[in-house]
Image 1 (tube, helix red, strand yellow):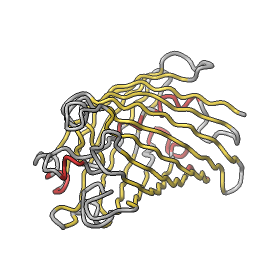
Image 2 (cartoon, one colour):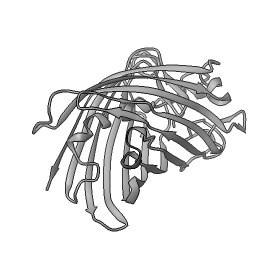
Image 3 (cartoon, helix red, strand yellow):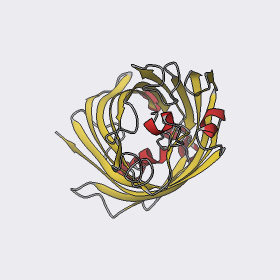
Image 4 (cartoon, rainbow, N blue to C red):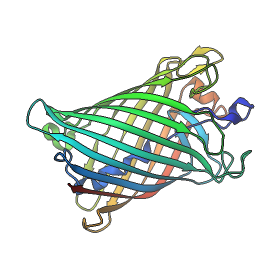
Length: 297
Protein backbone atom coordinates (compact mmCIF):
# COMPACT_ATOMS: atom_id res chain seq x y z
CA UNK A 1 0.00 0.00 0.00
CA UNK A 2 1.92 2.99 1.25
CA UNK A 3 5.50 3.89 1.98
CA UNK A 4 6.30 5.87 5.09
CA UNK A 5 8.59 8.85 5.29
CA UNK A 6 10.39 6.97 8.06
CA UNK A 7 11.27 4.18 5.65
CA UNK A 8 12.92 6.62 3.29
CA UNK A 9 14.86 7.98 6.24
CA UNK A 10 16.23 4.53 7.05
CA UNK A 11 13.78 3.44 9.76
CA UNK A 12 11.98 0.10 9.68
CA UNK A 13 8.37 1.31 9.83
CA UNK A 14 6.51 0.42 6.64
CA UNK A 15 2.91 0.83 5.58
CA UNK A 16 0.43 -2.02 6.01
CA UNK A 17 -3.19 -2.98 6.34
CA UNK A 18 -4.71 -6.22 7.60
CA UNK A 19 -7.37 -8.50 6.24
CA UNK A 20 -9.13 -8.71 9.59
CA UNK A 21 -10.47 -5.14 9.42
CA UNK A 22 -12.95 -5.98 6.72
CA UNK A 23 -14.23 -9.23 8.16
CA UNK A 24 -16.75 -7.76 10.59
CA UNK A 25 -19.52 -7.55 7.99
CA UNK A 26 -20.46 -11.27 7.70
CA UNK A 27 -21.66 -11.47 11.29
CA UNK A 28 -24.29 -8.82 10.74
CA UNK A 29 -25.14 -9.69 7.17
CA UNK A 30 -28.50 -11.01 8.32
CA UNK A 31 -29.60 -7.42 8.87
CA UNK A 32 -29.65 -6.71 5.12
CA UNK A 33 -30.27 -9.12 2.21
CA UNK A 34 -27.17 -10.10 0.24
CA UNK A 35 -28.65 -8.56 -2.93
CA UNK A 36 -30.92 -5.80 -1.61
CA UNK A 37 -33.66 -4.32 -3.75
CA UNK A 38 -33.02 -1.09 -5.60
CA UNK A 39 -33.16 1.88 -3.26
CA UNK A 40 -31.95 0.01 -0.17
CA UNK A 41 -29.37 1.95 1.82
CA UNK A 42 -26.98 0.08 4.08
CA UNK A 43 -24.62 1.44 6.69
CA UNK A 44 -21.73 -0.56 8.13
CA UNK A 45 -19.52 0.87 10.86
CA UNK A 46 -17.28 -0.23 13.69
CA UNK A 47 -13.92 -0.13 15.39
CA UNK A 48 -11.14 -2.71 15.58
CA UNK A 49 -8.11 -2.95 17.86
CA UNK A 50 -5.01 -4.73 16.51
CA UNK A 51 -1.53 -5.46 17.80
CA UNK A 52 0.10 -5.11 14.38
CA UNK A 53 -0.78 -3.32 11.17
CA UNK A 54 0.15 -5.17 7.98
CA UNK A 55 -0.78 -4.30 4.41
CA UNK A 56 -0.25 -7.01 1.82
CA UNK A 57 2.70 -8.25 3.82
CA UNK A 58 4.29 -4.84 4.46
CA UNK A 59 4.76 -4.00 8.14
CA UNK A 60 3.34 -0.69 9.18
CA UNK A 61 3.58 -0.56 12.96
CA UNK A 62 3.54 -3.06 15.81
CA UNK A 63 4.76 -1.04 18.77
CA UNK A 64 1.44 -0.37 20.54
CA UNK A 65 -2.24 -1.25 20.17
CA UNK A 66 -3.66 0.37 17.01
CA UNK A 67 -7.27 1.51 16.57
CA UNK A 68 -9.17 1.25 13.27
CA UNK A 69 -12.51 3.13 13.14
CA UNK A 70 -14.39 2.76 9.86
CA UNK A 71 -17.71 3.41 8.15
CA UNK A 72 -19.35 2.39 4.85
CA UNK A 73 -22.44 3.68 3.06
CA UNK A 74 -23.93 1.40 0.41
CA UNK A 75 -26.73 2.10 -2.08
CA UNK A 76 -28.46 -0.55 -4.20
CA UNK A 77 -29.08 1.05 -7.60
CA UNK A 78 -30.66 -1.86 -9.44
CA UNK A 79 -32.16 -5.27 -8.77
CA UNK A 80 -33.48 -7.60 -11.49
CA UNK A 81 -34.01 -11.16 -12.68
CA UNK A 82 -31.91 -11.05 -15.86
CA UNK A 83 -28.26 -11.84 -16.36
CA UNK A 84 -27.38 -8.75 -14.34
CA UNK A 85 -28.92 -9.32 -10.91
CA UNK A 86 -27.83 -6.19 -9.06
CA UNK A 87 -25.88 -2.95 -9.23
CA UNK A 88 -24.64 -1.14 -6.15
CA UNK A 89 -22.23 1.54 -5.06
CA UNK A 90 -20.35 1.97 -1.79
CA UNK A 91 -18.54 4.93 -0.26
CA UNK A 92 -16.31 4.23 2.71
CA UNK A 93 -13.79 5.81 5.05
CA UNK A 94 -11.23 3.95 7.16
CA UNK A 95 -8.72 5.33 9.65
CA UNK A 96 -5.70 4.06 11.55
CA UNK A 97 -4.76 5.66 14.89
CA UNK A 98 -1.29 4.89 16.26
CA UNK A 99 -0.01 5.68 19.77
CA UNK A 100 3.31 3.99 18.90
CA UNK A 101 6.25 4.65 16.58
CA UNK A 102 4.18 5.46 13.47
CA UNK A 103 2.06 7.93 15.42
CA UNK A 104 2.20 9.76 18.72
CA UNK A 105 5.53 8.28 19.86
CA UNK A 106 7.12 8.78 16.44
CA UNK A 107 8.64 11.73 14.56
CA UNK A 108 5.26 13.39 13.92
CA UNK A 109 4.05 13.24 17.51
CA UNK A 110 0.50 12.86 16.13
CA UNK A 111 -1.90 9.95 16.57
CA UNK A 112 -3.74 9.95 13.22
CA UNK A 113 -1.53 7.91 10.92
CA UNK A 114 -3.75 6.98 8.01
CA UNK A 115 -6.98 8.09 6.37
CA UNK A 116 -8.44 6.07 3.53
CA UNK A 117 -11.37 6.86 1.24
CA UNK A 118 -12.66 4.38 -1.28
CA UNK A 119 -15.64 4.01 -3.59
CA UNK A 120 -16.82 0.79 -5.26
CA UNK A 121 -19.11 -0.05 -8.15
CA UNK A 122 -20.39 -3.59 -7.68
CA UNK A 123 -22.18 -5.75 -10.27
CA UNK A 124 -23.96 -8.95 -9.26
CA UNK A 125 -24.59 -11.79 -11.71
CA UNK A 126 -26.17 -15.23 -11.58
CA UNK A 127 -24.53 -18.07 -9.72
CA UNK A 128 -23.28 -15.79 -6.96
CA UNK A 129 -20.72 -14.10 -9.22
CA UNK A 130 -19.89 -10.46 -8.49
CA UNK A 131 -17.51 -7.96 -10.03
CA UNK A 132 -16.37 -4.87 -8.13
CA UNK A 133 -14.23 -1.93 -9.20
CA UNK A 134 -12.77 0.20 -6.40
CA UNK A 135 -10.89 3.48 -6.38
CA UNK A 136 -8.93 4.07 -3.17
CA UNK A 137 -7.05 7.14 -1.98
CA UNK A 138 -4.64 6.64 0.93
CA UNK A 139 -3.27 9.63 2.84
CA UNK A 140 -1.42 10.28 6.09
CA UNK A 141 -2.70 13.12 8.31
CA UNK A 142 0.51 12.97 10.37
CA UNK A 143 2.68 13.08 7.25
CA UNK A 144 4.32 9.67 7.65
CA UNK A 145 3.84 8.64 4.02
CA UNK A 146 3.09 10.20 0.65
CA UNK A 147 -0.44 9.88 -0.83
CA UNK A 148 -1.20 6.68 -2.72
CA UNK A 149 -3.91 6.17 -5.35
CA UNK A 150 -5.11 2.80 -6.56
CA UNK A 151 -7.67 1.16 -8.83
CA UNK A 152 -8.62 -2.43 -7.96
CA UNK A 153 -10.88 -4.96 -9.66
CA UNK A 154 -12.24 -7.92 -7.72
CA UNK A 155 -14.04 -10.99 -9.08
CA UNK A 156 -15.74 -13.09 -6.40
CA UNK A 157 -17.99 -16.15 -6.34
CA UNK A 158 -20.40 -16.96 -3.51
CA UNK A 159 -20.82 -20.69 -3.99
CA UNK A 160 -22.81 -21.26 -0.78
CA UNK A 161 -26.07 -21.84 -2.69
CA UNK A 162 -24.51 -24.83 -4.47
CA UNK A 163 -22.07 -26.16 -1.89
CA UNK A 164 -23.75 -25.22 1.38
CA UNK A 165 -21.40 -25.72 4.33
CA UNK A 166 -18.65 -26.74 1.90
CA UNK A 167 -18.60 -23.34 0.21
CA UNK A 168 -15.17 -21.72 -0.14
CA UNK A 169 -16.16 -18.34 -1.71
CA UNK A 170 -13.13 -17.84 -3.97
CA UNK A 171 -12.02 -14.44 -5.21
CA UNK A 172 -9.31 -12.74 -7.23
CA UNK A 173 -8.25 -9.11 -6.89
CA UNK A 174 -5.97 -7.09 -9.16
CA UNK A 175 -4.78 -3.61 -8.10
CA UNK A 176 -2.93 -0.91 -10.05
CA UNK A 177 -0.98 1.95 -8.49
CA UNK A 178 -1.68 5.34 -10.07
CA UNK A 179 0.10 8.67 -10.35
CA UNK A 180 3.48 7.45 -9.07
CA UNK A 181 7.09 8.61 -9.26
CA UNK A 182 10.30 6.80 -8.24
CA UNK A 183 10.04 6.29 -4.48
CA UNK A 184 6.70 8.08 -4.22
CA UNK A 185 3.11 6.86 -4.16
CA UNK A 186 4.10 3.19 -4.06
CA UNK A 187 3.81 0.54 -1.41
CA UNK A 188 7.39 -0.63 -1.88
CA UNK A 189 8.99 2.82 -2.49
CA UNK A 190 10.19 1.31 -5.75
CA UNK A 191 11.15 2.75 -9.11
CA UNK A 192 8.02 1.81 -11.05
CA UNK A 193 4.27 1.72 -10.38
CA UNK A 194 3.25 -1.70 -9.14
CA UNK A 195 0.53 -4.12 -10.14
CA UNK A 196 -0.69 -6.51 -7.46
CA UNK A 197 -2.75 -9.69 -7.55
CA UNK A 198 -4.42 -11.43 -4.61
CA UNK A 199 -6.04 -14.87 -4.72
CA UNK A 200 -8.06 -16.18 -1.83
CA UNK A 201 -10.89 -18.23 -0.40
CA UNK A 202 -13.22 -17.46 2.49
CA UNK A 203 -14.74 -20.64 3.90
CA UNK A 204 -16.71 -20.46 7.11
CA UNK A 205 -19.66 -21.54 9.18
CA UNK A 206 -22.53 -19.48 10.54
CA UNK A 207 -25.34 -19.93 13.04
CA UNK A 208 -27.73 -17.56 14.81
CA UNK A 209 -25.41 -17.17 17.79
CA UNK A 210 -21.94 -17.23 16.23
CA UNK A 211 -20.11 -17.30 12.89
CA UNK A 212 -16.58 -18.49 12.19
CA UNK A 213 -14.54 -17.65 9.09
CA UNK A 214 -11.20 -19.04 7.90
CA UNK A 215 -9.93 -16.72 5.14
CA UNK A 216 -6.81 -17.79 3.24
CA UNK A 217 -5.01 -15.65 0.66
CA UNK A 218 -1.76 -15.12 -1.19
CA UNK A 219 -0.41 -11.77 -2.41
CA UNK A 220 1.75 -11.64 -5.54
CA UNK A 221 3.36 -9.06 -7.77
CA UNK A 222 2.16 -8.91 -11.36
CA UNK A 223 4.88 -6.33 -11.95
CA UNK A 224 7.01 -4.10 -9.72
CA UNK A 225 4.84 -4.42 -6.61
CA UNK A 226 7.43 -6.07 -4.35
CA UNK A 227 10.60 -4.32 -5.50
CA UNK A 228 13.75 -4.68 -3.40
CA UNK A 229 17.02 -3.07 -4.50
CA UNK A 230 15.56 -2.68 -7.98
CA UNK A 231 14.46 -6.33 -8.28
CA UNK A 232 10.78 -7.31 -8.28
CA UNK A 233 10.07 -10.39 -6.16
CA UNK A 234 6.86 -12.09 -7.25
CA UNK A 235 5.86 -13.63 -3.90
CA UNK A 236 4.72 -11.09 -1.33
CA UNK A 237 3.04 -13.06 1.45
CA UNK A 238 0.72 -15.91 2.37
CA UNK A 239 -1.99 -15.42 4.97
CA UNK A 240 -4.29 -17.73 6.91
CA UNK A 241 -6.67 -16.38 9.54
CA UNK A 242 -9.63 -17.25 11.73
CA UNK A 243 -12.35 -14.89 12.90
CA UNK A 244 -15.19 -15.42 15.33
CA UNK A 245 -18.18 -13.06 15.24
CA UNK A 246 -20.97 -12.99 17.81
CA UNK A 247 -24.18 -11.00 17.21
CA UNK A 248 -25.35 -8.88 20.14
CA UNK A 249 -29.05 -9.59 20.52
CA UNK A 250 -31.61 -9.38 17.77
CA UNK A 251 -31.66 -6.95 14.87
CA UNK A 252 -33.46 -3.78 15.95
CA UNK A 253 -34.36 -0.43 14.43
CA UNK A 254 -30.76 0.56 15.18
CA UNK A 255 -29.43 -2.35 13.11
CA UNK A 256 -27.45 -5.47 13.98
CA UNK A 257 -24.51 -5.17 16.38
CA UNK A 258 -21.73 -7.68 16.81
CA UNK A 259 -18.42 -8.25 18.55
CA UNK A 260 -15.64 -10.05 16.73
CA UNK A 261 -12.07 -11.17 17.22
CA UNK A 262 -9.49 -13.18 15.39
CA UNK A 263 -5.91 -14.09 14.64
CA UNK A 264 -3.96 -14.03 11.38
CA UNK A 265 -0.64 -15.60 10.43
CA UNK A 266 1.39 -14.14 7.56
CA UNK A 267 4.37 -15.84 5.93
CA UNK A 268 6.47 -13.23 4.14
CA UNK A 269 8.46 -13.14 0.90
CA UNK A 270 11.91 -11.64 0.32
CA UNK A 271 10.78 -8.01 0.03
CA UNK A 272 8.26 -8.05 2.85
CA UNK A 273 10.66 -10.01 5.07
CA UNK A 274 13.39 -7.40 4.53
CA UNK A 275 10.98 -4.62 5.44
CA UNK A 276 9.83 -6.56 8.50
CA UNK A 277 13.25 -6.33 10.12
CA UNK A 278 14.32 -9.69 8.68
CA UNK A 279 11.49 -11.67 10.33
CA UNK A 280 9.86 -14.07 7.90
CA UNK A 281 6.45 -14.25 9.55
CA UNK A 282 3.96 -12.22 11.54
CA UNK A 283 1.09 -12.96 13.95
CA UNK A 284 -1.76 -10.46 14.14
CA UNK A 285 -4.53 -10.36 16.73
CA UNK A 286 -7.69 -8.27 16.58
CA UNK A 287 -10.82 -7.47 18.56
CA UNK A 288 -13.65 -5.09 17.78
CA UNK A 289 -17.34 -4.33 17.39
CA UNK A 290 -19.46 -3.62 14.34
CA UNK A 291 -22.87 -2.36 13.28
CA UNK A 292 -24.80 -3.03 10.08
CA UNK A 293 -28.18 -1.60 9.24
CA UNK A 294 -30.27 -1.13 6.14
CA UNK A 295 -33.35 0.75 5.05
CA UNK A 296 -35.38 0.93 1.84
CA UNK A 297 -36.24 4.29 0.43
